[in-house]
Length: 268
Image 1 (cartoon, rainbow, N blue to C red):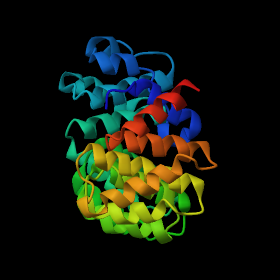
Image 2: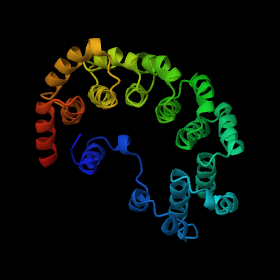
Image 3: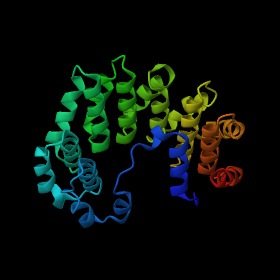
Image 4: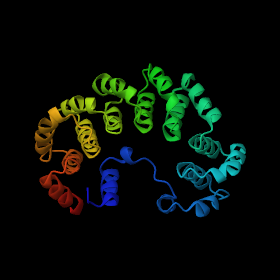
């Protein structure tokens, strides 16, 4: 899709901040893969900067930074220690990833949600079965964190769970968003059904995910026309998030009308 990806990301963050998450201080350096510049900030006086630097190095698979990151496990700030552990898990440290898995059975919903988020960022796919078990809770924060993590880990065995969570769970929007990251054609039908849901955020997330499936070539071919027809209707939805995500999805399908509408919405 030959559109301004940065402008699209900014518009999505404006319409639904929860979809964007907290931006890294080092977004530009990550894009340039400037490991040296990021490493130099591991000793920054601000804990948030140290933490972002650690996670950025994990994201870039900077194995040379492993000794520094291990030293940061003793940082006086708990947030920095957590970021260093996430980074090391990203770099393949299974011992730390397994510690996050163990935390999924903690009695505190805050701890479980934090562990789920860390596992999603770490990319530790063996955690998927444990995340699915950890969902047996009545806490929406935990459900949302697990749904997001399952999307990040990209394991298709999570599809049935996410479909059920979207329809009956505590975090339907996060589940719908995660389905768009698994590249599984079987997600097409439930996402199409969600386009008619009364909750605008769910309609928007389902549209966005259908667009992602289309870009990945993972839309169920039998349902393609049905999806396109529903998305065309949603570009006139009363909710701006829905209109934007519908246009974005149509552009993902290669629909010329969708591309035109998306450019107009980005310019407005």
